[in-house]
Structures are given as C-alpha cells and as structure tokens.
Length: 466
Image 1: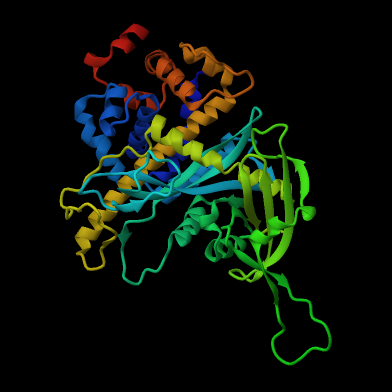
Image 2: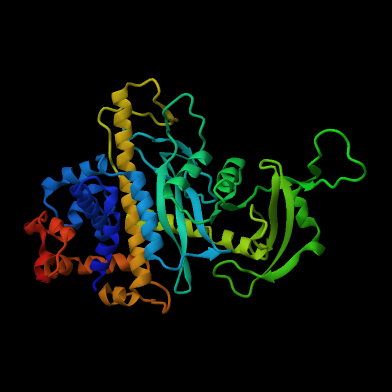
C-alpha cells in the first residue's frame, strides 16, 4: 500500500458530510492541494501545487462557499474518523483527553467579515499588542504513539467579530461548549484548558455531560473550607461555606507539601513539590480539587480539577500536555496554512482600522445571508486544513517506515522510535503524488477527478514519473 492509497481510504470516510458527489471531490482536491503545496497563498497555491487548469480556480473557490458542505456533519464525521484511525488515544481514568484553546490570526482585509481589533496577551516582544484579525477557538484530541503524545485537531471556529442579534448574550465560554457539542465525543473525557476557561459556564456545561475540566486558576483566586456544623441545628438553610481561603496561601506552609518526580511531558530527573486540597469553589457551588505545584525552574502554579477522584500527579501530567495544542497551532500556521484564506466579500461595507464587533441585527436579510456564506467559506477552508494536518499525523503514526522510504530527501537528525513530523510526511506525499496519479492501476474517483483537471503544459514532474 502506498501513502496516497492510505490517505485516500481515510478521507473517503468523510463522504456522508456532502450532499453532492462533486462537492466532496472538490473538497478532497483542496485537502490534497494543502498537503503538497509549498507556498501559503490561498486557493492559487492549491491550483499550482496540483497542476490544475487555471479555469478550475473559480470552481475550487466556489466549493468552499457551497451549501453542499454540511460543516457540522463534517466535523462530527472527522471526529469519528480520528477515533477510528488512531487506535491509542490518551486515556486517564478511562476517559479521553481533549485540549482547547484560542488563537488569533492577523487579517488586514477591509472586506472580510469577522475581522476586528484584537488584544494579544503574550510574553513575546515580537508580537504587537493589538492586531486586526480573526479570533478562533479550537479543540484537539490527545493521542499517544511511539513514546510520544500529540494533539490531533478536530475543529476550529471564528467566535468573535460578528453580533447577529442584540439579544445574543453568548460569550466565548458558551461558544466553546457548543463547539465541544459539535465535535460529538460521546465517551466521557477530560477537557484541558488554560485559566481563561476556569469558569462556571465551562464547568457546568461539562458536568452536565459527565465530563470534567482540568485547568489552571488565577493567582488571586479564593475558595472556602466546607462548613462543619457544631451543636444543635437552627432554623433556616444550612450553612455551606466555612473559612475563606486565598489559594496563594497554600504555598506558604512548606511542611504540607509532598515531593515527587515530575510527571510533565519530556522532563527527567526533576523533582516537584505539590499539595492537594478539596475546597468549595463559589462559582460552581461544589467541591473542587486544587493542586499547588512548585517547580524548580518553572515556578509556582495553581491547578484545578472538577474530578475529585483524579490524583494530583495525573492533574499535573494532564495540564503539562496542554502545550501540545500550541504546537499544533504552530504546524497549522507555518506548514499547513490552515488559516491562509483570502476570501473577500465584494458587497461588504469596508472596515476601518480599530473596528470592533460588526452588529448585523439591523442589516437586510440578503446582507446577513452573504455574511453567513462568507463565514461558512472560512470555516470550510479551516476544516480542510485541520483534516490535512490530521491525515499527516495519521500517516506518520501508522506508516513511519513507508514515510521514510518515500521521503527522498535528507535530514541531519532522524530520531529512531519517534514518528516523523508533518513536514516529513508532507514531503513524502509531494514526492509520490505523480506516481500515484499516473501509475496506479486501480484508480478511484478521487484520482480520476484530479487527473482529468490537470494542465499537461505544467506537468514536468508528472512526465518524469511516467
């Protein structure tokens, strides 16, 4: 089996998300183009990478806007495909582990819906404090393979910039819960996120579905010792909250701290100190497990988990894996180009530098539908990039030897036992694409569809392959 045959078999699982066969084939063509392209320049780079005839540019671009792509169904099917393709997802206490975070993508288009002024909170002095762009939230699944752990992206959505109704009071937290529902993980899971998501809406939304949150809490957070009643009961509602406790004060008593080897991913011969306290947290009105951690080089950290049966070491280990989604973002931005879309809306009212949310409840129905169509195109493009990245990770895990045999290039360091990176897999697919399209005796619809739309005048590599 070649890499492209395995790639084709995996992506065929997504066919039910499209109401028309042609729309599915164009979407697969876009994913293939994202896989093998060497430049991140939107739809034109996909056309050049696959050597398509220029007249098919408009059809490929229009397919991202097509209503035949059922986006929520596509996300759910992709999640099912990930669970099927990766047989060893990370499990803790019998639960899967999902990671969520937000990302801000710079966009300067004056006629791009959803673009607004965004504040970047970062310790890096290379990032500007304010940018114009799209604010997205994403969800990934943690997977174990070959002594490594990585985040397989499942879905991402633009969650800021557009206000459809003046009665809409949803926040980013509400939209993250809705995104988790779209992904459709039926098994119980832990949701790992940063301190922004340590809020009542997230915890309540997760607990309603028998899921739990693992997160960090802010340094100024407070909790309460459960009240213990002494003496005869009085009339009225029983008291629940006892002594108020600043969580930072838990670091001040070193005698209560325990020592253990660091469970953080990639660390060896490192000893940490930690303390566990089950306290009442007023935002959710229930007991929550807090873990104070002192790391010899990373400093102090306050962690929280809504599952009282999860050990402190597992809580520290899970939160230590949160950075995997950050690395996944890096690959999506710099290698795949999942957010390199350039779809402008001709009839849109142009934006100005510093604009905030775009309020659409007073606009005409046609204008609102045009905005929805453009946002749909953005989301389909992003989902194509997510599927492209996930398939690269799948081939890296399932066929590492075949990937290296098809790499046909050179790397200074190749670590045995570690799956090849997305860059290596993408290069291997780029090298073997001409052979797959032209010399495969068992062609399916996908291969025929691409070959029939290629331009023979620009196919030097394909002529060499034949």
